[in-house]
Length: 147
Image (tube, rainbow, N blue to C red; front, top):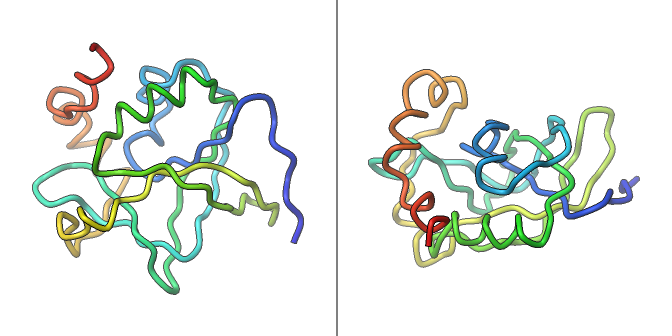
């Protein structure tokens, strides 16, 4: 397995709302352009009553997302506050197009919050068309950044 050498700053695997580069920049600051990647062994599900997803380990699961590089220490602090208590940051390995593997960090739903995930899948297209405005207006993580 070929694993890419990380660039300056940390690498982040976004699988939900932060796949939107504008939202990520607003939270973590400027980052290098993202690239499509896949995380194996996890499932992405919609959080009950919300427009955003969470991931949990799941045998045979594959989650598509975006690999971003160049997350600074300040960016990680802001991401941690934004994601809140429901998520924990974990190291993962993702595969980008062309088969290259990359070490990154991803926010995984803590086991204590697993029941908050529905059986519904999440779609970036549906989020962008119908949920992004609601998310930016209502998600508590944005308030955490202001404190």
